[in-house]
Amino acid sequence: MATNHRIYMDHAATSWPKSEAVLSAMTDFIRNCGSAAGRGGYRSAVEADRLISLVRRQLAAFIESPSSDCISFHSNGTAALNTAIYGLVGPGDHVVVSAAEHNSVLRPLHELAQRSGVRLSIVPVSVGGAVEVDHFLEAIEPETRLAVLTHASNVTGVMQPVAEIGKSLRSTQTALLCDAAQTFGSVPISVSELGVDLLAAPGHKCSGGPLGTALLYVSPELHEQIRPSVYGGTGSQSESLEMPLSMPQKLEPGNLNVPAICGWGVALTELGDLGTRQQHSLSLSRKLHEGLRGISSLSVHGSEGSLPIASVTMEGLDPADLAAILDSEFGVEARAGFHCAALIHEYLGTESKGTLRLSAGHGTQIAEVEMVIRAVSEVVEELGRS
Image (cartoon, rainbow, N blue to C red):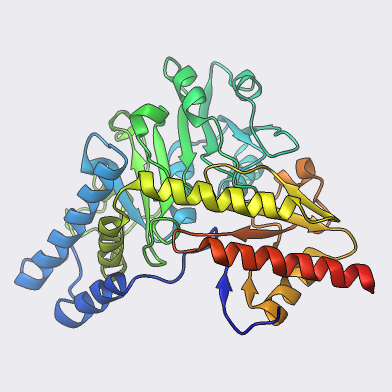
């Protein structure tokens, strides 16, 4: 089944291709405006401000934020998560996370534990990568400052019980941070229904925006509490050595990536009805998991669900070698390794070599998933004959 056709199956890393409208919005801004936002009172600078405000309002509506002031822009999801963590967690604080978290959460917290004496409780997950609500809540102490839970695992695609945990934490002083990297733009998100105090998400994955974009939602109750973790010019109160006290300016030092944010705004407009997208994702997930589970010598970690992500391992072949064969022989582009998730593999039983992750996107066709399954099956058959 060797082919030169490119089958992109790494949407969990970043979506591809970006739409022509997204690319046009970016180049149009660069060619016809090009000014920095918040840095001048002339016409093109005012236009840059207007475009930033427009996308900020789009994002606020998208997650049902009470105000666009709750939305700050960041260079990527990692930067947004770091802004939340370093902005709220101080020396000696207690933080609860799950073993399903991305290194964008685990590494800054590990650094704080090493340097500042932050106490870190890590909640285990099931063999499928799911967090149990009771186990998570049992780790919460009366003085816990922050709890962090991914909306969905980037390794298995398994959705986590954020809303159930958020509901239980509403009457406590513990702030809940949700990493929505894998779900923003794929499933409906309401910060109030999830019960989260903070939510971080990149723009370049499910929502179809370009790299260099991300949001951090901060609930109004935390606007005064959250501290800047990066300091610099904001275009306002420039006569003062102090950072602005108001959101979102206090979290947005330096120039914003206006061209990329403009592209993201167009991508958000193109998303349309998420219900339709959800149905397509469910169909892709079902086809992917059912097909892969039907291949002997192949282990599928996790289960089908809202996201079309499947992590697999194969007897007798390292995930990296499987990825290389799929790429060179079949044009299937997938990621092998640990997927920047240091702890979950211990529970999946994949701590030695990681997994091969196959992740589809909104533009992926059922026929392409079928081609991927046939390709993996051929590799297994060939390995069995050798």
